[in-house]
Image (cartoon, rainbow, N blue to C red; front, side, top):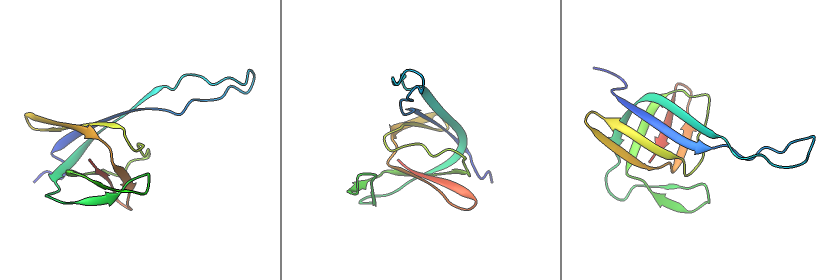
Length: 104
């Protein structure tokens, strides 16, 4: 049995960075996270607290090896489950002691 049989790709933009010399903000740069994962359907009626404090529904729970980067709410997510691709927006990401979890 393979612990992480699927793959995941996350895409988002960094926060604009202020130049100390000119005081202007530069354009956000694109960031990505690619990893192996294990995605499972969440079932019906599952909800979590979103970044804005409101309850929001999610359709997949995705488990992946512990990550050093936390993707922000709303990042574009594509999960490859064999011949099927599942796309959506990240609802929440959390690092536990030995793994990371994404709600999609």
